[in-house]
Image 1 (cartoon, rainbow, N blue to C red):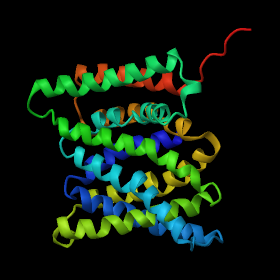
Image 2: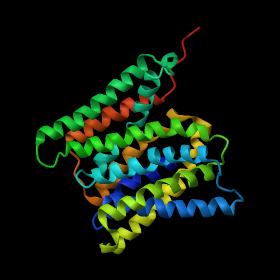
Image 3: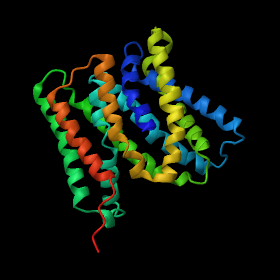
Image 4: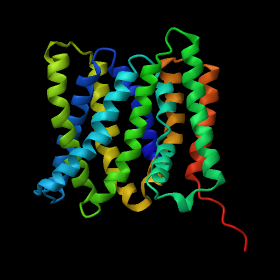
Length: 285
């Protein structure tokens, strides 16, 4: 619940920051501040960062999947679509986790009618949301919506990849992955957007700091602990709550308008996610 609220609010904060801070610069600031904070916490707790190159190579992939790619895709997407819609589309990681498990042969034993219906409902919700908005014409931004779905795929792959860090303390994994994300994003922001030429408002700066401290540093510590205790599917299953928080905050704080296609799509997506995430009923003896 806490992680869902934290990540649900991130869509609103991203929208606020984007008013005067472009996507790459915002993501670079977010992951850099979070990385420095996580490193300080790790060192303060008596931990040291890994020294093996193989571990850092794995952390680089983790940082790419968990932060660099999804943060950038969502931020760019929100330059064209409402934060609530981004939250709805980003509720799909559990569906991708199940599809990945089936494609790799790891989920065949757990497949049943409930999960098939869940995946079908979730995909129908996505198609409904994107398809109707695209037919509506101006402002639909189907590419932006697909970008947010791409972020969802990254979020599905990240906890699967993150299982390999079970021997590292959660704070060390979070600090290492976020440091790699910062290394990737800083030069990209400098080359593409020249952030030293920007004039961000105090509100935008506060939003970036909140994204870094609460929605990234704190969230990552919780996230890696959940991967170890609950596994990838259960860790991503809270995304249906995240979507609800994103829509609620976007409507109440940003004045975003809810269309019937978003509401209908959200209902189908959340129904599908719940069906996939809930334990299957045990057969009667």
